[in-house]
Amino acid sequence: MNPPDPLAPPVLELHVRATLRAGERHFALDAAFESRAMRTALLGASGSGKSTLLQAVAGLLPEARGHVRVQGRSLMDSQAGVNLPARLRRIGYVFQDYALFPHMSVLQNLRFGAREPEARAQIDSLLQRFDIEALRDAMPRSLSGGQRQRVALARALAAQPRLLLLDEPLSALDTALRTRLRAELAQMLSRVPVPVLIVTHDPQDVQALAQAVVELDAGRVVG
Image 1 (cartoon, helix red, strand yellow):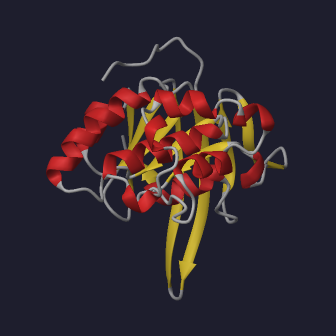
Image 2 (cartoon, helix red, strand yellow):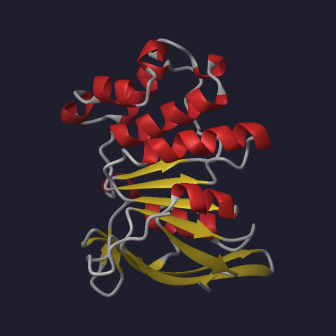
């Protein structure tokens, strides 16, 4: 894990607060950190608030307050009255199960992500970069776990995001496949030109994928 330059400006700055209620139970999120790394891992046990924080950063949590800045650009700043909707934040989101559209081919999935004309012009380059050019007409059900992972990353990048979010990208895999795909994912992320925030509960993921780590417990940063 190569450490970031301590003199570089923050790549990601956030302080997010939210209280989520379900019946008589509630969960309080109050997490703040800065990162100068292009690849930051958000580490914590199940229920620590990692995925909730990711949703807030993406603009999918209406209750969230505070600020979120990516490379100096404000996506949310409650004091300044800034709260961009999710569609305007330009954030790529790769879910735990990859969430590919099952009725669309690989190429159609990427085209869905690339809504702008200049973004669509980059699709062939993404197919080559992630070694899925031969799969352009394949349907998601026919793909292996590693292929689905590559397609999901390519689709997220097709939208030319300012930030890429990965929510437990390896947790649904068995041990042998997880080990192999962790190495593949590390190689792919080294070529991703935007900041990446990776949610995981596994220290091995942190070691392989990230340049910096933020530990979360009960909705708060503890390390």
